[in-house]
Image (cartoon, rainbow, N blue to C red; front, top):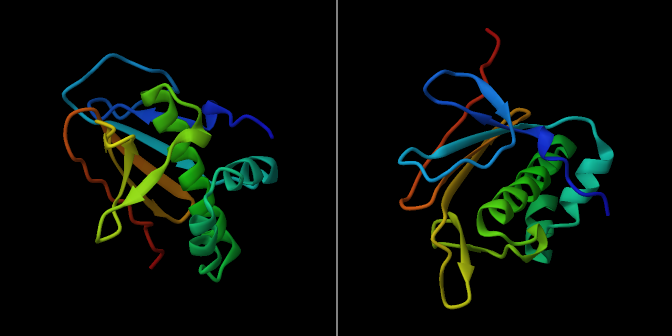
Amino acid sequence: MTILKPRLLRQLDSRTGTSAFFERVGPTELPEIWMAQRTDCDEEARACDALLTDEERIRRDRFRQTADQQRFALGRGWLRVLLGEYLGLPPRHINLHYRPHGKPYVKLREQSSGVYFNIAHSGDVVLFAIHPNSEVGIDVEQEKDE
């Protein structure tokens, strides 16, 4: 399996609007916001798809459009790569659980991981918000041509 290339994930600096290549920084009071964009890279799509659980594959297959299926698989794969970096675990060892309304979280052994995150996608863009100490939320909406 191909190792996912972190260069595809960009960290957005909310203060300046600039982006930088994937790089861990020290703890912060602000959530870290990450953006990824779906490309036509079949190799990367297969690598992300290989990280999905059986339940996630079923969920992926419920999408009718191929682009939506790929966006879901890439989003979950990239999420595991990011969370693996934060938790010091291989992406394959990141087990996502879901709250009653569907919000995912990571559970390590019998307790929550201590990393809070949220994911949103629209069009070819996937956004991730990650914070070590508190719940976060993020949303993105594709601008429609009028």
